[in-house]
Length: 364
Image (cartoon, rainbow, N blue to C red):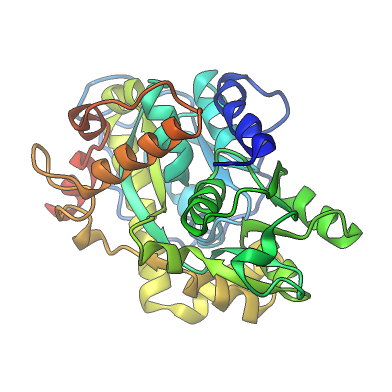
């Protein structure tokens, strides 16, 4: 990239990734309905994992990103409450602004499982933060886009402009790829979290942002979208929302991780087969309109549980994994940006993609 400011800012990302940020996670205070039906088998010997024989922990700490559709549905439908009832393990939901913050939480052993984006996950796995991918929630489409002021009509119009994005996120990865693809070097790319992006946009401090819904919708309302992650995916620049688990936690408590993955599959079923319920859940939990909820759901390509073990996605245990290849490719791009010294071999990333838990669910 030609832009010195952008290059120097990008070089700082990994240093930020390993810092333990205080106050970046917020415990959820959300009431959940009591009629959820999560297919986790009630254990006859409650309190002990029936697979490993390990005594269950007092709680499982779950990291999610603000605005997550899957997690909004899981909370609204009471899936976490049902998980607690079936296992006797308390669920503590922690909200984070970006995947960089989730990596920080993993680095400080502050979370056990998390859903976040493939770009920060490529950084975290390469730097051996001790987690693995256990489920693919969705590939990202129009839910993440570059929204800009109405006077910006073409890529060339970005020259000299200030564009914000959360560094080390999937949006950041997509933005840098787009600028490189278009040969645009003199853009001032700055690091802001989603809510700070919205405030900066309203003040007129920035000319646009590559960010996700629902903040994206707020910017798009008074601007226009120049490119989306769906457009970039057509050129092979793929990003995804993934579910992860701490490796040691997964080894000690495979039944809990399987239960957490099953929550993801139940949320998928709501999106795929009960669209009106999914919209209602997003409206209630994210405080957005029905139109915004529909746009958010349409902005991702949701991956069915039955597709998870195909070679295109997780792949079966010991077989080819398209996701591992995507994570490696993403890490290689981070090397070009100075965020990583080097990427690992494909086998390294393949080892951090674990389809065991979804296979257990599919084989029931």
